[in-house]
Length: 347
Image 1 (spheres, rainbow, N blue to C red):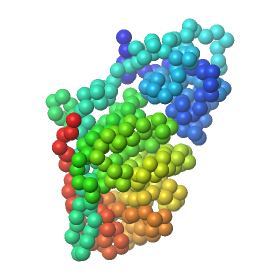
Image 2: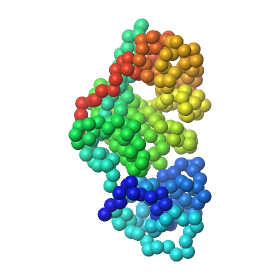
Image 3: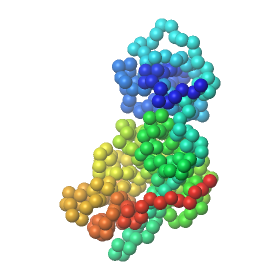
Image 4: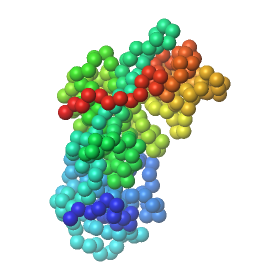
């Protein structure tokens, strides 16, 4: 009988032994995370081949391990969070038992039903005056209940995180986005969101995404991978390695919400994105608030410095659009140009 996800305990878990090193990438933790018994994180690394893993985190990694590594050669013992390794361990658990008894969660059911719907919000380029023509779309995911009711993206992400299925949801949304826009205009660009904190090894975790692109009519130049939830990324070197993988394969990438929170000017300089999205906080009322205008100019200058295209998001008023265009924000996005709307369903 599969365990109920809500019943998973932070003190219950598995002791894992491997004959080869268990790197932080394999364990699904950040490279700067401290994996000591004194911490309260989901992983305790006893030595380079032995780790205790919290039950929820463990089950979230099962599919990743089964696909890319050799977990049948590892040894697993069910064990409460230990302060020290016990002298005597409980009987080992077989990998096949783990596969058969892992929790079933509604996020998995949603993915298996293909119940992810993509909405698109126009991205425009301004020409003379404030005339705008659509150059592409940001693709935004929604879940769909059997009743047809839509599940907002923040609810999807929150529940996927609580169920340790964020990697699976993020991957499914990327693939769905690609399937949705294949066979659409070749001169359009499509912004596809991704959550970097769930990508452990780019070559492995993005394999399904790359296969979907190869099976589509899209060219790499049409796709812009947009970093979301970057506030959860403590290891910028790891994030930059993911972005380098995208760029090596011919794709562009965008940094979202620049100028607010963790997406500072320093981070912009370090990550060198192809497109910089000015946070809506500095867009709203930019024509009447000097501090917002000053921040918009600062982000614009650094965008030029790193060779990125500046894009203002959250544009709602014609006055905002005109002032931003005069600054140099020729790419814009917001309710002024269109709210997110569903794309035709693609199966």
